[in-house]
Image (cartoon, rainbow, N blue to C red; front, side, top):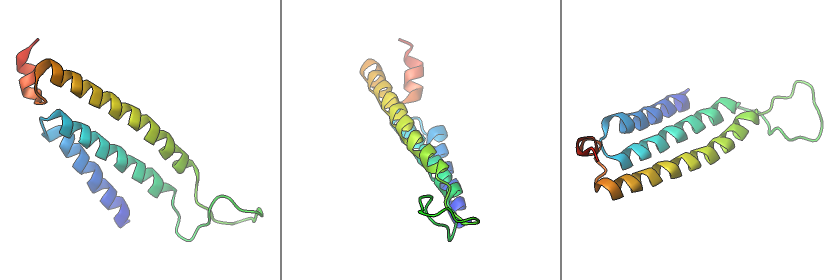
Length: 112
């Protein structure tokens, strides 16, 4: 249970970085923290204490094993998150080249 609470705290830290900061780079880092928190939640949801790996030689009825589906979802999420992060960084670079700043308030005031 403590791991889930720590995961929620990690998610809230990322959400704070996205909502409270005006710097675009800090917002991108906040999105990355949120992504890692969601991935960690998926892994924690699939974990079972005292369970075996899903690969075994004999099919034993009633055997407890770890669910492999959240792990596959996390692998897919990592690839998608990498693409989204690369796109956000590329947009930040173009905004900086055009406006000369990462501050959201200054960008809204420039209108160009």
